[in-house]
Amino acid sequence: MSPSNRAQPGRRPGRRPQGPRGPGAKGSTKPADPARLAAFEVLKAVRVDEAYANLVLPHVLGRLGLEGRDAAFATELASGTLRQQGTYDAVLAACIDRPLAKVEAKVLDVLRLGAHQVLSMRVPDHAAISTSVDLTRSKVGQGPAGFVNAVLRKLTRKSLDEWVAEVAPARERDHDGWASVAFSHPRWVVERLAEAVGRDQVDALLEADNAPPSVTLVARPGRATVAELGGTPTPYSPFGVTLDSGSPAGIVAVAEGRAGVQDEGSQLVAIALAEAGADRPEGRTESWLDLCAGPGGKSALLAALAAQQGALLVANERQPHRAGLVLANLTDRSTGTQVDGVAGVVAGDGTTPPFKDATFDRVLVDAPCTGLGALRRRPEARWRRATADLDVLVDLQRSLLDRAIDLTRPGGVVLYATCSPVLTETKGVVESVLEGRSDVTLEPISGTAGEVPDSAGPLPGTVQLWPHRHGTDAMFLALLRRTPE
Image (cartoon, rainbow, N blue to C red; front, side, top):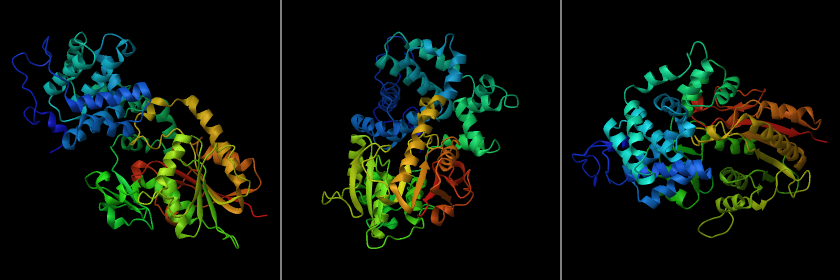
């Protein structure tokens, strides 16, 4: 049974009957449904604390003791509401006689949750409305309950498609405006993604951004095998599987840190650096660097690959608390010691790192970016970013890539990666650095990542992955070689 059907009358153990007063009746003291309360608390944490839903959700579920269908329902309700927030806000604005900015934030959170149930989940209208009213009374107060009841009743009069047709611009006249409402992306994001993927494919990309991603695991080679993880092998990474069901926490290799949750695109980034052709240094161990390592997923895979090649990885992360997460990912949980292939973890600014020039043979720059390639996993990122962020991020990306080249020995390689397909963060950064230096060349990515079909990037030899084509985050990969002396 689908988790969303749990809201139907009589389906949930412990559900109190409505009684003769009915949903929304004045004076009702019915407590908030725990699953909906969990979703409400996630939205509040995202709004107030700028939390990431996928990180805060497990803590909320654990604190409220939600498991199974209830946990799945809360997860879809919170994540789906965040993904579709732009669409729901446009619809709610048509149902409310004042600007949404004038609606109390907590009440608007409840209305968005109610809209998702009414318009996008298989929840009966009366159940969606009554539980939203109960939630309002519990977390906001008696006063706004009638307002929530009236707005959501108005919302039930039309389907989602009918509402979009009413509140969005005409598709033929203003495609980007229509897509912004229909697919719940800020207009500027629609424009930037269309520039990157092409207008003939942008609708498919936006739709893929709103599809809940599968849970993908990585078996860190030499420490775990794909067979241990169960699930279905990923089509491109030889170390990945997608879970068919169940929680990663129940898999022994994951619990022991020998495997982890990691998108297939991120796996391909680490694999691409490890497989890049490079002259083996004579008489010494090859040295690798992950310049922007936090929280450490790619570092963990890189360390395993480095160990198989007799190399050592240094992981650098600017923020000390994130460096701690990297260290945890690179620690053998059974012995408390660093895993094979690790030389150390350093907390340092990647633009002014504590390393000598020409120290490393391979360097990964997984640069901070807008994150617009991972909106399936972090739906709230689309509402937090603005065009002004691009200038700041692009300057940082150029600086990190430029410094990474300095740290690479002649003949060594740098892999520049972003979890964003936006051209100013991908093509623009690489071209800018290449134009400013005479000691580096762009080389085609070969091997596993280079063989992914239909993944040609915006520059020759680069790779651009896409959610709608490959089922991965929209990772960009470019390989640069420091010119031998």
